[in-house]
Length: 154
Image (spheres, rainbow, N blue to C red):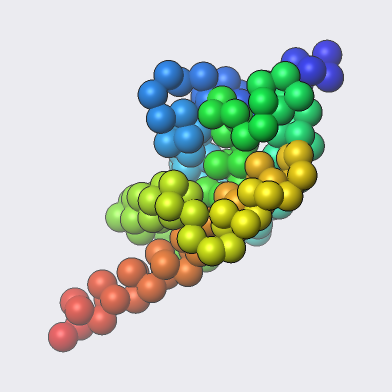
């Protein structure tokens, strides 16, 4: 039962089994949860980000024993990163879409120190690079939104 639960959670309730770009498809469920269920509730997003990070460290660490280190099917780390990306982003479809694409880009590129965070052991390494990418994406998203506001007020 422990292996099944770890795999179910680590694969983002099986969203990591999508055959093409599982990281991107694994990022969609938390985005949908944030947009449609949590909406503009920042405390809800903080709780979701914290819970996803904790669950990610544990379940990814367990699932990697079976699937391999940072296997493509393990996408719970994307859940943590996506929720972190959306923290305090003004609630709108455009802003959340910007956040989604920024997160996916920075998660793939892995700007310092995200790549270095991958070197941490087990579930920590799997999760922390996405946590770092989530923080970076959050900052870039806020910058983009601010720049858009500045350009529209000219």
